[in-house]
Image (tube, rainbow, N blue to C red; front, side, top):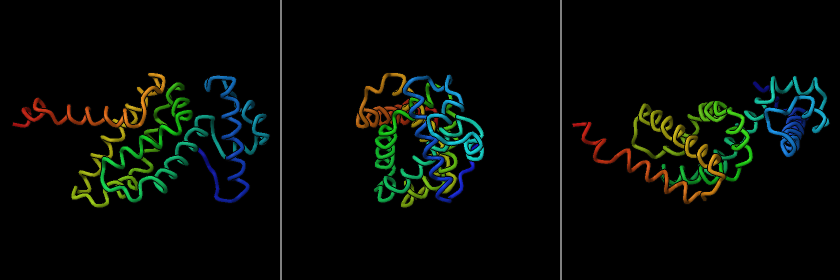
Length: 189
């Protein structure tokens, strides 16, 4: 878990630590990086690291949450519908491919799920604000979109980041069509 206060010193130390981790990842895989490596690269003392973070994966969690905050602040407001929100989210996450790749390659997908969960209510209020869905329906849709989004982005990383946001959106549309296809509808009868 991370414990970053809103004061300027804590914010600056957290920034230095995240930059130090990024610097270390140029030479080593995440699993081989130590807190000492990050501490040296960031010029932040060991005690400061542990005051802000419990472990190195917590630095990734912090970065992921910061990205979500930015997504919700800059991209989601003004979305006309769920489709636009999904596309903007895909495009935004693709712009942070290095963090995604680190999370996927280090087998820490729980970081993405936890960050989605922390921000689920804001996502629901942003993307579904004009929706006629019930609150329960919004929660189910958010859960489904979270899983699909993380799954698609994970495969995108594993495939070498080949597709564009437009390509991934078309893949999601295809998945949606498959899920709502005739075979699924036949089961409902």
